[in-house]
Image 1 (cartoon, rainbow, N blue to C red):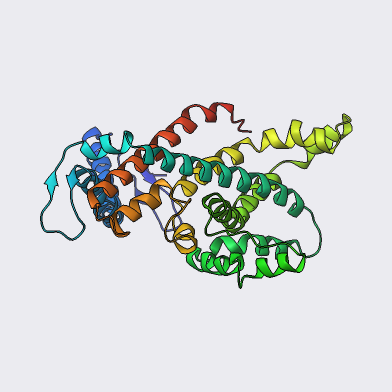
Image 2: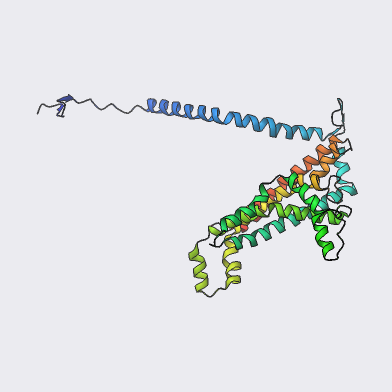
Length: 321
């Protein structure tokens, strides 16, 4: 054995001396790697960021500016009025009715969609034949066009030629005037909105139910808990993350509901929510685009405040397992 050589199958190979560590080279390598990763990130994210800025944040900022104008849509000139649109809105009696209609619609649709959705999910959470078909049937209205659903149900509720009126007349009951009574118009839209969005809440709750370990439920049954006690003491508390998620998304969706209201009650008689009032002010003959922009800004602020309240206050009651 010759010193300084290592025997291999290919013959003697000279041993390379071990190079000392070079901190500067390591730093340069890390910098090059970070630069490459940053370049890849920018290349992938820049188009999306540009689209978000162009079509989301830029219109938002412009809308806030338009809310300070007395402007008719399409007019080449506008008059700056500062905060007069906001003062007019918050001091008007009509605004109180708009807020009340918005609150009633939101509370009714969110409560009914989530409550009925949970009941449907409990029924679907069974291993029986045809469960998949039932789940698809329940969820299918959610993916349908809101305008199409509204037009179909408008025909159903029609007191003269509608299917519901025909059924009621068969029992000797006159069909209510859904479209001429403001209260009934709101009830009608709430019914259709809940029917359309019930499947969304049911599918989300069903996913939450299926994520609960059967061992926990079996342990509760062994301790003597009946079906009702097991639901309120075990199942429902474990569904709190699902309920919180549905509450946030359902409130946001209800406050922005437009297509059904537009299709079923074009004049907004009894169904003029905040977002629909913004539409009517700009496109419904009022010629108040600046006032409409103010309503949109108020709605955006309301959405932000409600979301923050839910995240700060309600999330503390959520039990993540």
